[in-house]
Amino acid sequence: GNLSGAETELARALDICERAGLIAQSVEAISARAVALALAGRLEQAQAAAEEAERLAGRLHYPVGQAAKAEAAGATADEPSACAAAIEDARQRWIELGRPLDAARCLMERGRLLSDSDPDAASELLDAAASEYEDLGAPALAERARNAVTS
Image (cartoon, rainbow, N blue to C red; front, side, top):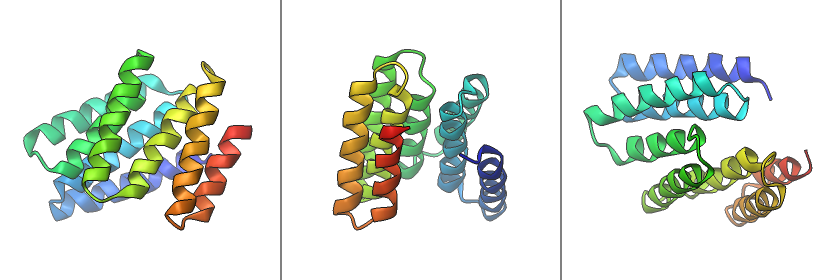
């Protein structure tokens, strides 16, 4: 709910990553910014950030960068089917990388992105995210997913 704070922290993270030469993590920070902007309804800025992540990820093919890039592409896709496909691709990549919290986040993002257009599907995705977070021992994230269902 604090987009300006998130943008500040993501800019700080990106600066650190760039100074340290951490390209995959730079892609993660840019992609996270794209997702945050998309969730805030700032689609034009979100798409620009997703394009930046795409360019950077294209330089080196790190699996983490590819997963983050797919997540950003899904969050900023114009068509619901493209959104679902890209975020599911990201989710599968996170699972393959052994990062189940990131995979669960993909469910939550899809649910939040669908909240206006398909409330029933959104509720199912958010419930699934909450269950995964619970199974992973992250009750605060599970609660956040549950609260997203009712908001």
